[in-house]
Image 1: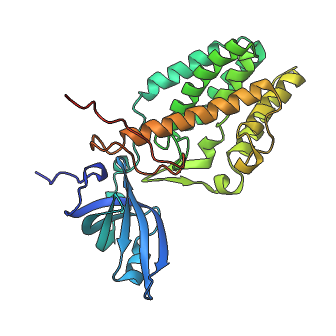
Image 2: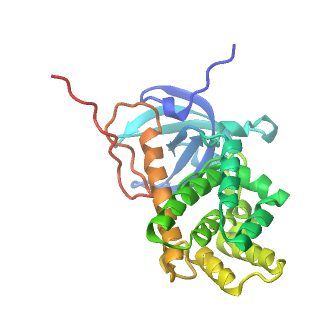
Length: 321
């Protein structure tokens, strides 16, 4: 029987580890007394952990490249309330030996169920032209194939297989309810929600990790989706110009602010709602992920969450007596 895998969520300080992880990031840093050391991030589908290399730095820097799957040997330590692995040796795992499912987790919700829910949302769009547009887009074999498995981000939120589908369905469901509450155009809000991150199916790719494609680095998901949607609109006869204008504005404005890469700030109530619900869904999901990651550690606070720029309180169990 093979030895059980040492998942990152199960690591404990003071133990030796020899296991296979994917390198998420690598920095060469300078010691105070001179000389370099390596600071890196290792990951599997259960989480990530910091790594440090103090010896044989030049050689290991060539092995521990971001995106590489490596087998490392080292010791788990705790520093400033966070675990880290001090790496003594490492080797690259040949591609044919890599099981990608070990390194990128999947949505906890069945993708078939999510896709069925997405199509229900499409069918529920009252505006006939918008509904036809959505059917044209999501019936495209390439779009469906990519959308079913794409992540919503590289690391910030829903950064896992089918994460984009989970985020899109969640967001569109909430946005539709809020559109009714505020008396807004529900068809535009749902269509904008379903399409707001469409470009990510071409921006990101999943292997042992989540990486940007060339199109993702050069163009980004906003231009990619706007070009795609506008092309599909041009194929339809008599698509209303005002509907096109409002829908494309939602896509271009959904990041909300210029500082966050938004070409336009929301200038319609529907665009503002889509932006706000997108932000809400991403941050609530990120907070819940931080709370539940690492298993039941018994600790009241999570590790620092960069997306939220804070630690998250898990709640302490009620004290007895």
